[in-house]
Amino acid sequence: MALGLGGEVGEVQNNIKKLERDDNNQLKEDRRNKIITELGNTMWYFTGICNQIGCSLQEVLENNMEKLSQRNQ
Image 1 (tube, one colour):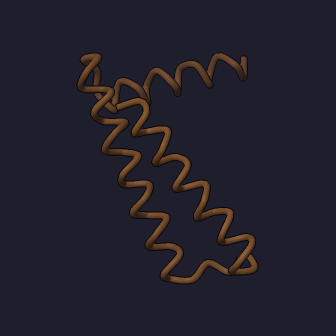
Image 2: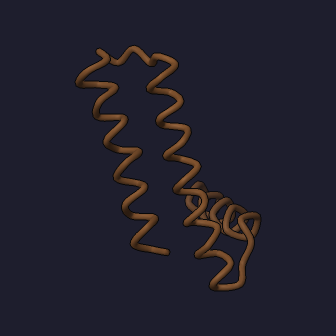
């Protein structure tokens, strides 16, 4: 799952690169849809990792929010 997540993150990055390189930073519907599709794929793997370690997406988000709030103190 972790390797799949890494690959999908690379696909998101590749589409962002193409947005800058090929599309002159003009987000067109086709590129937007490709990015959304790849983000969905990353979420599938991310959720799979959460399931394997026995946590929820909510738990991950809450943990991160707590960590970030402590940085601002």
